[in-house]
Amino acid sequence: MDVRLPRLGEGADSGTVASIFVKVGDQVKKDQPVLELESEKAVASIPAPSAGTVTALHIKEGDQIKVGQLILSLSEEGAAVPRRVIDASVGDEGAPSQAPSAEPVLLSTEPVSLSPEAVPLSADAGVPPPASPSLRKMARELGIDLRRVRGSERGGRIVMADIRRYLEGLQRAALAAKGGTPAPHVPAPAPAVDFERWGKVERRKLTTLRATISGRMVASWTTIPHITQFDEADITSLLALRKKYGPRYEKQNAHLTLTAFAVKALVPVLKKYPIFASSLDETASEIVLKQYLHVGIAVDTEQGLIVPVLRDVDRKSLLDVARELQDLAERTRQRKVGIEEMQGGSFTISNQGGIGSGHFTPIVNKPEVAILGIGRGVVRPVVVGKAVQQRTMLPLSLSYDHRIIDGADAARFMVDLVQEFETFKDADVRLSS
Image 1 (cartoon, rainbow, N blue to C red):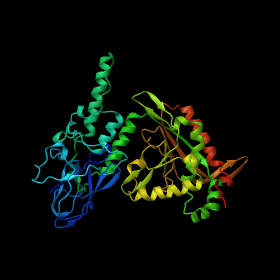
Image 2: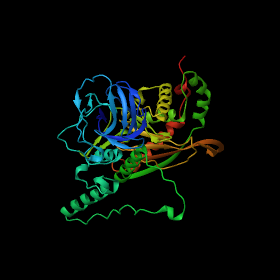
Image 3: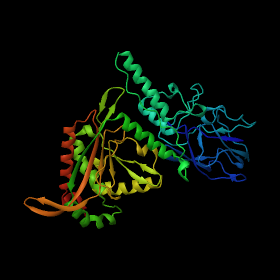
């Protein structure tokens, strides 16, 4: 019996084989995980559709595979209950797959859960053009129909350079129709370089996660006009409160981190300036003002930067925020957060203070319109009143979408945010007995 990759979740039709749990000769039970598939920023286990003995493996770790592709063969032990046949014509990179065996695998109609909603395969939808998951995601966000893009790689595979050429063509056509001047030429990617001419090199394949990050950063940077507002906050009093109450928070299984204070400092400022927690619906030419405050937290992991979302921060106490931040960060580093936990953010925080960074220019996390960067607090002499005192100053960097946020509003936002950092009171941090 040939086993093919079942349909996944919404927007996920391919992925990278992260781990294979079986080998030829192994006996497996029905629904036993046989491999892990990394798609976008989630990792999902793929179960065996029936019990049997593994007679062949058709993939290896690191392979890019897609829905309908042959992954392994089983010698069945007992009759399986068939429910739906996966179309055997859908193979790797959109090419015809191997001919089905005499006993093609019959899989459940239940999808592997990679997202809250599942989209079934459509027999008349045609085979989508081959492209990486990150590029497909970017195309969806930009409203690009990949079927209209000519792929330049082997087998018609679409890469970033093809998207750039396609967008350039649209710009030129639009301007020509209006009688305008053609848009400046977007330079093609640099030609391949033989780095080994100058010495020994090591090559590492771009991971699915890194490719996803790359695609999203390109989409954000090339479609959003970024401006960054810099300031700093005196957090001397805040750190005193943290030192005073930190041990009590530890007893409640919560780390009283600077990020937790930042989340709570943002709440009244985002309520005062809701445009900073909005999104731009480019299709409808509308600003979407959200009636909720969900804050994304950039987490540094071994695989790359991942941004899970902390929900309804305006309804949570400092203790709740600290406790949930700790849990969210730990699960993110273990790659145990689902795709739905990284969606729906209103605003994002990127705290590099633990690494030692100062001011920096964070990139807006599209479709959001603003992001706060936090650097490392530095002790230095500051004039307070008529005296010079040693104070701890915290670098703050606010990047925003200049299409819908003006510089004056960004300055006001930052002034108010600095005030929130500097005016935490004992009652704001004290735990109720």
